[in-house]
Image (cartoon, rainbow, N blue to C red; front, side):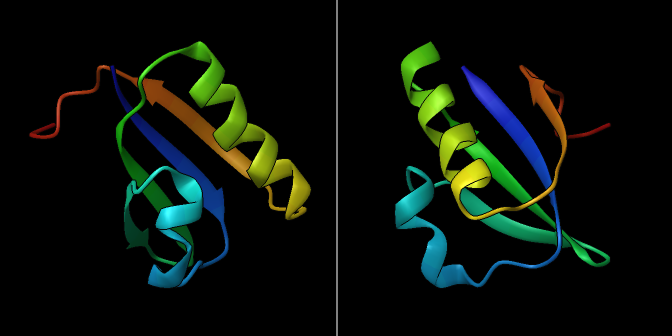
Length: 68
């Protein structure tokens, strides 16, 4: 399943591997993690890493349309 996770602040590209090799992009001062997540356990792992880094989660969207 495809996910788009928005986090407050900017993460460097070096964090991609830690976040299941999701693509890292930016929306102003926020970071967008985009990519395929294999299952709910993997999603929870990503969300736990966001929590462990004390980052602010803005949104999580699944099966989004990249053209909209």
